[in-house]
Length: 183
Image (cartoon, rainbow, N blue to C red; front, side, top):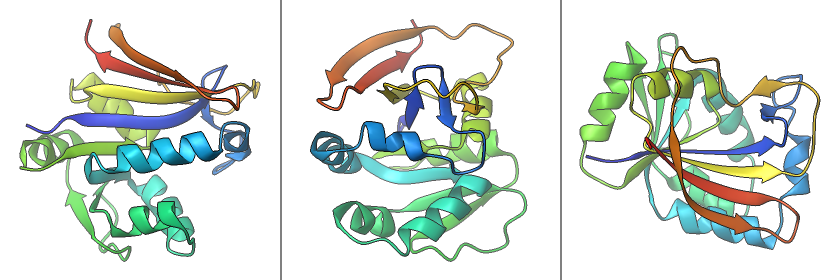
């Protein structure tokens, strides 16, 4: 079974997005050669990149017009969108996962291949975490306090224990933390 790995950049006060949709300016506080190399390195582990609909639409809009190594990776890798509303996916190598997300992602994880990664998609991830489908979190903590925005972790009705697997400090002041889900 493939693992499900969640990757996000998060502020010190827990936000992965600012007060407005796609307010990601704080990413610049951690971006540099080290994080670019890390992104390309972890890209080699990705079998399928999973998104919720809103994140898919924003990512597709951005990456189909971007250039460079990261853009090449994002545009060529297999992608899946958990959606009830989209009828088609136009971004290269994208398929739709229709119906209930938990069931669709359970089937996706059961497929052969490299791991499934989720970027952004906090609402989708909250339902997958609650269903016990998330295996690992990789979070780059940005050295900034936004004071408001969209939190990475949604309220849960149960405690979720995690085990620290690794830390990777960046010269930008950010830290990449890797946690295995489940104590």
